Image (cartoon, rainbow, N blue to C red; front, side, top):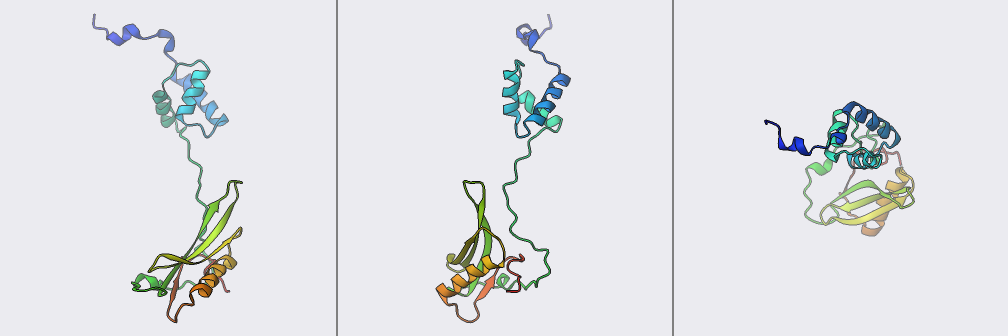
Length: 175
């Protein structure tokens, strides 16, 4: 007869118009902006619309309804500052012993309460050992100075020890 076998098994009530479906997806996307295609498909099925998750994914992608993940990155470096910018002495260095090159950076630690604290660390580049650190709820020069002072007190570096950091405003502060 020239009719595919799948046509015989197709349920006529399962066919849903794409325009009505896309309109419903737009409404759901406004109501639930963090829903991906799996949750959208589950929601549509809960509303009585028989639909495959692959079709929902295709329609969401085609109509720009894809979910953008939340940004979980906190910016800790501000390189656009008026403070002095020092040359990168660490680029040509290859330390062959301890206390020749210290590298420093700042990161944040998320707490279960939703807040976070900042951690400034100073590492010995040769041994990769933490030689000093500072922990605070604020991010400014006091935090980086606390980490550097802790490293100096702990290790008492010899003359010529290079302290390398990013070009953030915390490290270029007057103090």
